[in-house]
Image (cartoon, rainbow, N blue to C red):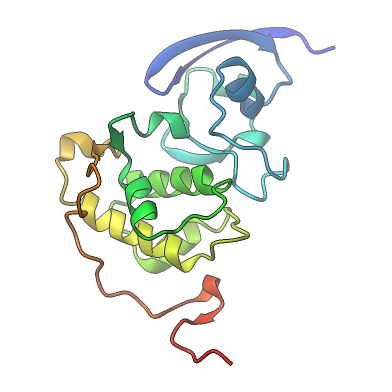
Length: 200
């Protein structure tokens, strides 16, 4: 039987302490103990990306991380990248690009993209595709998601630098977004073809 351990870490900007079994996954602790259910369980083997969180500014699959590994670290979940009146720029762009259908995978995509923009505020299309390679979507297709993240990066680069560190900017409140999509490739390798091809 696994022993209880005490783990101290920072969760969504707050210092927290939990005493729990050493063999529990970060995913389970987030959902069951802290009731942060935006982090989803999909494959349980680190392949789908639905459980992605940010640990020390890096995207991590929480289904593969034991809670003891979080000691002294900074953990951000999907609940920590926005607030009731403010959306993460990636979230805003995903809505604008209609890059969402069932929504199950969306938190993981947002977290992977947010981690990318924390490290590289001006990624190329190829860098975005690499950053999302661990996230699977079975209904939307990837081009809209990649377009959204590309545009979110352009918009965030114009935001107040003091607010960009957590990728939080004021919500548009339903008004048009303050940027226009830039020229991007017509074909995204992950999306499966040229959207300009005639339908047969």
